Every structure is written in C-alpha cells, then in structure tokens.
Image (cartoon, rainbow, N blue to C red; front, side, top):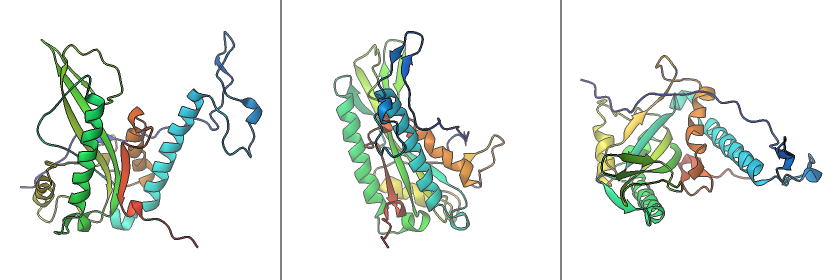
Length: 257
C-alpha cells in the first residue's frame, strides 16, 4: 500500500501587488494629518526615497515578496523539478516557556533547528543531496497556554497576548520550500528513508505538501505555484530576515563576468 505523508492541501491564490512606489501624503485625509513621506524627494532617479514608516514597511514587504518569487522562478527547472514541494518539520517533544522568556526561547530554538537542519543536509548517506537541489526555509513558533478551560496559540512571539496562565509550551518548526529532481517519498513511496534521516538528526518526521489548485491538482505552473512563498514572506516575523534563509543551490553566488 502506498504511504501518503502529507499535510492539508494548500491552495494557491495569486495576489495583486500594491502599486509602486508606496507613497502617500495624508495618513488621515479627512483631518489632513500627513503620513510623513517627503514628497520633495519624489524623483525617479532617487535611489532611496524618503518614505514614512508605514509606506516604507509596505514597500519592504512588497520587495521581500518580489525578491523571493524572483529567486524561486530563477532556480526552477520544469524538466528537472516538475513542481515545488513543501517540507514542514520541528523539534519533537513539548518545549516549555513562559511570558518572560518566550522571545529568548524563540531565538534559542531557531538556532537549534538551524544547526540540526544544517547537519542533516550534510549527512554522508547522500539521501538529501540526491533528492533536493535547494530551497528556502522559514522559521515559526506556535505558543500554547493552558488556563482552567481555555487554550491559546500564536505564531508570532512578538505579539502581545493576554494569557491566562504563565506556563506556556512552545513548538518551534521550519517550513521549507524545496526544489529537487526526485519524489521525496523515495523508491518505495513510503517515506522511510526521509523519516529515518530526519529522526536521526533529532528533527522528527517531516510532513510533505504540494501547492494545489481548487480542484486539488498539483500546480504545474511555476507562475502560480511561486506565490506559495508569499504566504510566509507576508508574516510580520519575517521582516528582519533572521527567521528565514536558503540552502543548497539557492546559496550559490553568480560569477561576475
């Protein structure tokens, strides 16, 4: 029997990007409250326009998504890769934390996951290298607090939550967008090789997901499937770059001619 090891189907919906150049004049037009953009520097030759904080955040968000999609499209080879894949994995067992330490724990487990993922990719058995050319990773944590009758969860540790209980559990995990020439399920389509590799390095069993259309069919078009990456680049905790990265051939620098 074929073993299926996938998470829920994630349907891709293409977004319409905000119109460049992310300028404004009034934060509140009715009360004529200026947003803070310096319109005197609104010049096509201006390399770094003086935007207000809000419009600059919108621009950085758009640029982050644009660069991520551009990179994915550039690295994608339809004949070799066929479609993009998603891996989700984390550290097994429950990790404890609390309100005071949740930010530090978020950073600690991020580094722990990065180290284990790095070591796993360099395992001598060669399974990973034969299956995967490269990709991008995105780090998240899920917090859960146990009150008398309620439970809570939050993906972003920098959000302020009204927790009923100081004792929380934290679930650190990676979402990876992967390009590779082979089916991650392996020759026998049972994921045994992949599971054994991840468990060997303390990463538990990964789940595998393909971007699909509304009918549940895998998306063959990279133009549509590439917007899968924006699901993660859109999130607030991806702003400073510390919670995302790349691996494999995505890190190979182009030779200058």
